[in-house]
Length: 258
Image (cartoon, rainbow, N blue to C red; front, side, top):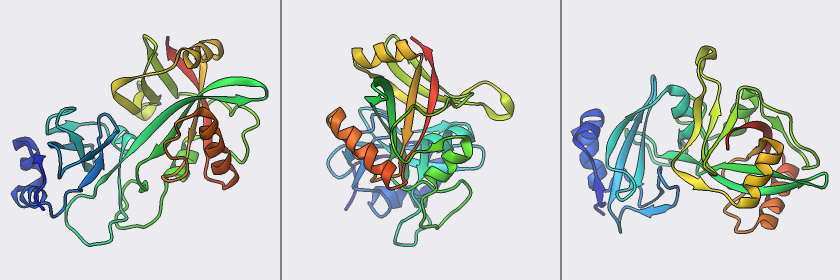
């Protein structure tokens, strides 16, 4: 079925007329997707949808966004940003020459009780399996191994705060969450591992805890491990279950901003 897709001239020039036409015809475009801007569900059969092509040094990933959030465009990013913020899903069952759909990092904020004290936490879960950069056609999910290589620690039970991961930080500005920063390549300036297209609101109690501890705990789990939990007690239950199943890593990060 034809999709309500917008494919800009710049995106068409990068992916080619044939692939652009196949997307518009609905052959390789998803019906439902998670908007790469606001991270909420979209449906290219029901609403205008923008194709957004992220191009890194070695990798290009085609993402989808509500047309009301982003116009169709080509976005130049560093390879680190591309690998960290927009991952390709490689588990497509049918062979295709199209660029794979993307997995986006979803972030949930909440307070986590550890040793009798509330800590501000961010829980990261991708919308799909994460492939190791440079690999294609695999069926596995390398999200946790990649983070462990960056210094995150596996968590089997939530009893104490994880150790600080130096060089990483959580950027708050005017009480809103803007980005999770990681060390730049070659020891350069920090780059965004995850960045909000629109700053995310956090609760007053979360911000107060962040200002008290001057750090934020970041927990990460593979797709399907946590889900969208509407309450902090349910979020904690999901974290405990993921930890018990060996599907949780964590790190503490200094607070940048206010």
